[in-house]
Image 1 (tube, each protein chain N blue to C red):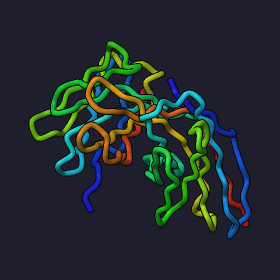
Image 2 (image 1 turned 135 degrees about the vertical axis):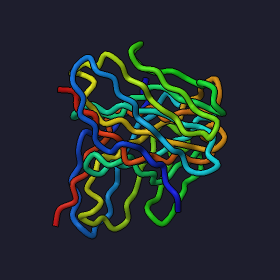
Image 3 (image 1 turned 90 degrees about the vertical axis):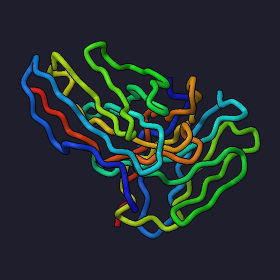
Image 4 (image 1 turned 30 degrees about the horizontal axis):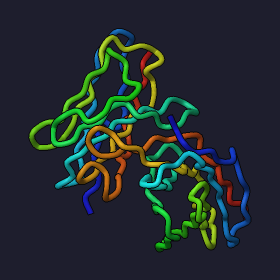
Amino acid sequence: AAGVIQSPRHLIKEKRETATLKCYPIPRHDTVYWYQQGPGQDPQFLISFYEKMQSDKGSIPDRFSAQQFSDYHSELNMSSLELGDSALYFCASSLGGGGNGYTFGSGTRLTVV
Amino acid sequence: DAKTTQPTSMDCAEGRAANLPCNHSTISGNEYVYWYRQIHSQGPQYIIHGLKNNETNEMASLIITEDRKSSTLILPHATLRDTAVYYCIVRVPMEYGNKLVFGAGTILRVKS
């Protein structure tokens, strides 16, 4: 069965650079969620989109932005990267705003040097 | 904010049942309890969820107390591959839909 696809799997950037993470949800899933997991931390909710509209916002820095496109894939854009942005970034998808389960991708490991 | 509290860690012997408790005393009447696990920085993996009735699937059983203030995840025959961080999550509403808010999970170590 198709899963949530995230790309790239690994990304190394320098401080003050920008990064774009991509998430391709399970086919027909209309809701996407982004999470950040720092070293030794639990996943923290960043932002979510339902039917291409932002549905909720968590602890996402102003330097980050995200959107969901017409094909339901989502991109997380991160600018002015800081060392503290080094983390695993997970995307999850669901159908109908989450009532039928949430499937997570394998994540993107971002390292800022 | 997360609405659950779990033990920091637990050990379980291989082949025995693993019982992972979770307190969610502030849960609302229509909020579901979800359990996920995360193995070594992989993406969180769905285990089971429930509202008020006990649930069972091929992976685990979920026992929810009658007052819904706590629940227990049961892995009936733990294997070494079940070693992971287990998250008990109360699904919270958003303006559109619901989201999962992770708290501090339980590190389960299955030992031979």
